[in-house]
Amino acid sequence: MTERTDVVVIGGGQAGLAAGYHLRRQGLDFVVLDAQATPGGAWQHTWNSLHLFSPAAFSSLPGRLMPTQPGEEYPDAGHVVAYLSDYEKRYDLPVLRPVRVHGVHDDGRLLRVETDSGTWQARAVISATGTWWRPFLPALPGRGDFEGRQLHAVSYRKPQDFTGRRVVVVGGGNSGAQIAADLAHDTELTWVTRRPPRFLADDIDGRALFDAATARRRALDEGRTDTGGVASLGDIVAVPPVREARDTGRLKASPMFVRLDRDGVVWADGTRAPADAVIWCTGFRPALSHLSPLGLRGSRGRIATRGTRSVQEPRLHLLGYGDWTGPASATLIGVGRPARDAAREIAGLLAAGG
Ligand code: FAD
Image 1 (cartoon, helix red, strand yellow):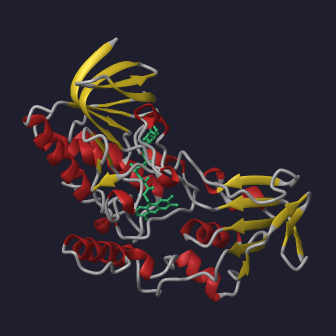
Image 2: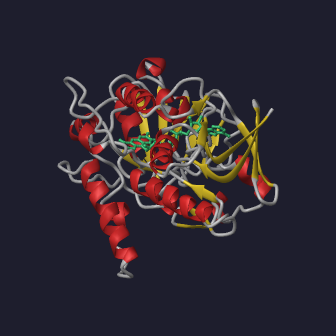
């Protein structure tokens, strides 16, 4: 089966839905192909205690405010899934799932999108596949020797799975701090970070992060000095459970160890911490393997972009992923503007006969 459309959006998480909203406003014909069986993208797979670091009103996609969650200032992941499910229904977005894209190919005038459910030909493609699907684990000596359990944050669900165990949590970002806080009561916890943890001030949440990202975007747009954006504020949002664990002395970070052995982790001075499990909260890489047939891969697994548009392939836009496709574009509230820009640029390109 081969279908034809103006634009194929790959990925039906928040970024793909925001793209759909703006493509519809541009009057373009499009389809959203999503590998998941149900709506909600990565939010369907997070650990049980995860809450947003912004209130609902500051976590909204274009066109529709996220409703508040009764009893929760910071909504949980289930609430986000419900919001995204409602969003795609409300705007009647043409999302097909489960459809996994294997490769995007340059067929001359059109891009050919090969999937496990047939082929689409499109005049433009928006890739919005996120990062959750490519967890990153650092290469450390002895990782293969460790006989305990090793998992990345994507596979962590709840503290009860580790009750009474000696757990090493690696990572000084939000995932590391939240998972360490989650485990602080019921396990023998060692939290390890590459540099001393940098908590944002307690009264700063995702709203301030978004403001910082916006200020940075303005500065860059106007050719002023880079303000440093979100990174200038700190790494860890002090959400209530993190704050509680920190303030009760349960969230003390140790420096990074240098290797693992059969039954624990070892620091440079020879100190050891025996461990039953190591949880790697060490980040993600963009899930871009479906674009490799286009031969565009740049440094650190990224693709060079101007805004959201690929520098080398103007029919391709990348949405979400991280600040390199637009400040805060990997957040609910931040993805709206780059999605709008991508849809506008594509409409312009197609109107010009591209
Ligand atoms: P995803 O949600 O990952 O969606 C991508 C979709 O593409 C998925 O459905 C996937 O199955 C599909 N896909 C992937 N590959 C293919 C393929 N080859 N073919 C077809 N489909 C494919 N943001 C906030 O705004 N507020 C927060 O509080 C917040 N907290 C966060 C906490 C954590 C721990 C993490 C990891 C992120 C958080 N974020 C937060 C960031 C961000 O909102 C999420 O990462 C979000 O899920 C990114 O959305 P996305 O649509 O880009 O990607």
